[in-house]
Image (tube, rainbow, N blue to C red; front, side):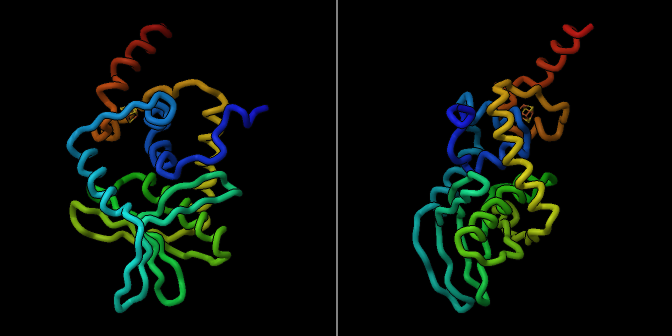
Length: 200
Ligand code: SF4
């Protein structure tokens, strides 16, 4: 019964949205909202390029592009931008616009990809990398126990939210909201103000 209202598998990219802000996840996933500003458009174009399936070889090994990954245990699925085969191991590599974030959302998406790959291959994946286009740097993300646990927790929180079926309140977080493309739709300050007035 319960599973009738839940998706079989959550898209990996939406774990990223939830980890950034549950309300942003709700607006995008449940309500289908999308605000195409310049940074979003840039990210879409870069991802379209990365999402052409294929593979290439260099002196370090083979790189697979646009790899479909999934986990039956976590019930998540999606596309890994790149999976590099280095020294007998696998390294998921995600491309992101912008700079290294102050938040964990990109790490959680990458870790979820690694958990999917581990389930498919029975190999342990120790780390992945995020390539940031704005400064063209790679950040190594170690998949330690804390990040693995946090990632699994986020998956459960998303399913719980979908079952609960209530739009989350806005964040009271100026820095995150300033960088959020959905701010004009979400109206966090106005919504919080109204909520405070109603509670008086
Ligand atoms: S504007 Fe702020 S509260 Fe609203 S969705 Fe974006 S990050 Fe979340």
